Length: 594
Image (cartoon, rainbow, N blue to C red; front, side):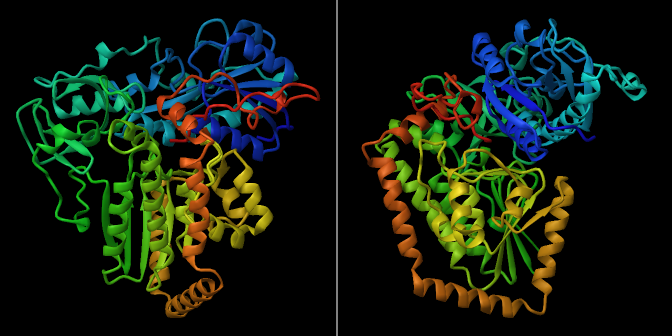
């Protein structure tokens, strides 16, 4: 539905993945946008006064919009629930209760929470998945559709030609109800009587935030990132063993893998891989390895797996929140080198469903303060491991490589993907191809070599200086990536498989590989990869070890999810300093798409 461009203020608790997607979609439709982080009523009121919006959009709030705003302006709230559903734990309860389909409602803010006039809704089938995954996928897609529909009605509403109503199909659909905040008492796992399905539902309903309060090895902690195990068994509650970063714990009828935990007694209380959070205890457990990369075993937890079809090898790596620690980078590089021994002509790096990669693992780096290592040393090791992986892709000259981004990517992950010969990205993926939000990091992963030939020197400067998200179709339009494919995840995977099989079967593949080798040789002669890498790492060494602590301060705030004190200027054009005004101090980082 077409609508004249308008001024829209996005009022949000944080600039999360949904807020980023909506910001990008509305920006591409010509609307003038500003973002204000919801810190206090007075701050939101000031933002409205400064920006003078036509409409306020609230994609992610943890408290009510003040009456001083909603009584004067239309304020549209995105609620992750069906019509009639009310309360702050909508998606949590839907997962816990086993709802078969769910939805997103866009409603107008009024005095009662989630009870105002409905402007639009969108429904979706519930997938058996963690809350965070549903939020990034189904909820985000439904929210985009509903918000664009609601915004499209604004001109009619302003002219008095449209009023909120419930069409017949809305009236006939199941309606929600007011439900309370889900508390830890509601989430508690009873290991001696809960079966696998119950345990998974509780953990999935709490994934991302707030986690399930529990204990491992007698230590209080919060649990996250659960996966079912279909074969291994133990006594209910028993921690059976470990595999890579995960711990296996028995239920009454099976077992679940626990991927991440946050210890209450840790000096650095952040979410970590379970075998890292409980390193000493995990070391004493039996190791439960899989036969190898080839296993591709869907009956258990596996963060790296390989599949093969039609001359194409598919390397999947599903790292939690897209963060890639030093060990994960080393393992993925080993898997890639192993994949090159297979009788294939194309290797597809498929990433995970929610994320392809978000670069270095900031939580693991922060936790290095608990070890003999330092965060600076851990950062240095991690970026070198990322660079080794990128270099392995760049030096692969015996087959074509494809990065297939079905999930979001940020920072070094965006440039690691560009190290492949071709980059295909799912429509709807949100990209953050810059490093500046993390304490003005310079960045590596050979971006100085990879980016300018694709987008030009000016284009490279714009991308690296920009601090706003980029959608898949924007990345392709500017030349950064190669193709924007189907937005529906299953259709995307089918399209990737078809295209990669066509590449592998093409008669001109030997010619393409020869051209690839010739280009790499010419580039190496002009300036070796080692020189590009050394120049980038010299800048990164200053970020990690230099006198400016911006990166370390930004990382500290990021991993602890520090409350925001103000809205960064790149999001808030209405707060640009006026002539003679005092500039604001450097801001802590925003919540990333991860």
